[in-house]
Length: 466
Image (tube, rainbow, N blue to C red; front, side, top):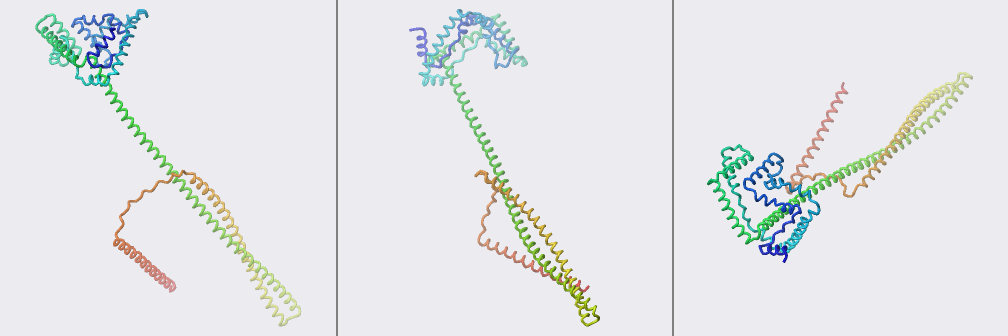
């Protein structure tokens, strides 16, 4: 059995399978080969505390956007210059570490398959397992915490860096003295370490390696966070969908309202144009009827004028004949026939004057009638032109109305609230009251008319007396 198979068997025997640890990079294996972790473990508590204080000081004096400062291990590894050494290696020198990375990747793939095969039961056990025992702190950390509490109670205005520096100096002094205080904290740390190892052994005997449990719980938290994020995204998506639906509904309502207003305007314009065409058509008919009456009157005037002219000619012939008769009788001398002829001449001349006056009057009436006919013809022509324009406008308006969509209609007027119908008795009383009001109004109107007539007659009598 190979070393990898033994590792897999040990992992299976130790407890349920947790999510496998991802493969380490070639740089990580190179870092292990440099014994950086062994060098860090070989440091004393004071030296580690100094590195921790250095990391804290670097965080306070630099970029504090990070949630917490780096630990002493990070600062220590940076001081070794491992990054620069890694960059200086050739491809041949990096080959062993690449091979370690390849084997670790194969290990990850095997553990991943085992995890996926047993994820239904093993993962559930690890996720529901209680929290693993917490690692104990060192004697230095116990002393530092106690010393910081004392300093904070005495001098509340001290900063974090000042507290750490004073606590570190007090620890150095306590360690150098080697008194009961130092032994006290060392013994506390040793007891805590022994208790932790016992708790860890009992815990791993039941649930397997602590790292597996921690990984499973972390994966559970990540899945829960992903589920919450997914639910939140679904809620936001539904909210956005509702908002979009409301916006689309409002936009559609605005479009329908705009279309309804347009339809209302178009239909109102059509109605106005049709009524204008009807009025212009009625005007044309009235003008045509008036023209017919005027033409009939003009024909009568013309006929009367012709008769007057004939009568005038006849009167003129009669007067001329009377003048000749008078002249002839005057040449013979005075005689009863001359007087008769003179009387006939006077009558003929008066008749001629009346005929000329009648002809002149009828000629003037004929001229006025002809002028009236011409005016009516002009008005009729203008009315026909206006009627033609009105008909054209009505056709255009009708065409525009016919082009409206079938669902486009003017906005409906608000329906008034319905009132409850009155009872039969109340309805009869309402009708009787309305009838009485109408009768009273008619009687008052008749009385007012009689009073008006009496007043007019009295005024006329007074005027005639004057």
